[in-house]
Image (cartoon, rainbow, N blue to C red; front, top):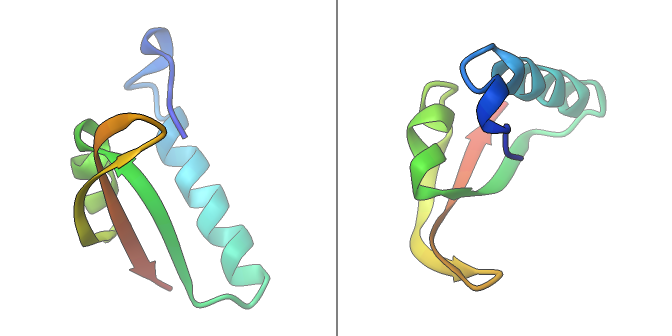
Length: 71
């Protein structure tokens, strides 16, 4: 997920994460695993996601982190 610069800071990213988490809970799943760019790690940490794999390259872009949240 990424939020375009003009709408960054408007709550769109937060709303999207909350919606995703609710959908995952409704489906009866217990965790979410995602790849986050370095600049987004702090955003996800605010929602209790934790790094489970340090920096790696994904789609040719270095500095992705594998993150997980137990629901």
